[in-house]
Image (cartoon, rainbow, N blue to C red; front, top):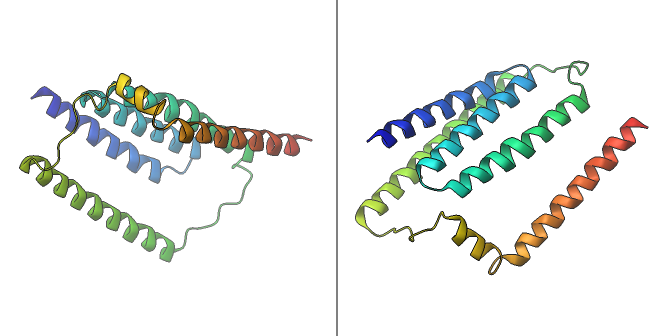
Amino acid sequence: MISTYLAYLFSGLAVLFAISTILQKNPVYSAASLIGVMVMLACNYVLLNAEFIAAIQIIVYVGAIMVLFVFVIMLLNLERAKREKLLISRRAVGVLLGLALSLKLAMVGYASKILIESGRLKIPEGMGSTQVIGKYLFSNYLLPFEVASLVLLVGLIGAIVLGKREAS
């Protein structure tokens, strides 16, 4: 019972942080709000007994991607950049796409609820545990894991080269 209330609390806070991410004019505050979203998602993963996914959510998204995002904000020095006014048509397209995405997410959630309640969709036992994820990651999915690490390495080298070129 308490976990249901906590899930609603964390989900509501995640939505509020997401809205704050969009509405902030300062990109650093927007990045901080995005960190709040990621932390609330990790809290929901803990409630779902997926501790490994929650840890990865914090380490990868909050730790690495947000630091990189803030680094890019500082590198670009957005205070000097001229900010163009957002056209009404762009806002309308953004609102329409956001509503369409929300509708699709609601439809998928409702369909999943029906499948779970009817018993046609069953989650395997221990699916979110670290041991099961590690077993699959380093046996069945070793090649995609290594390819992903190479892609990340190439991206890191590219960022260093671009950053060094600007400093020279």
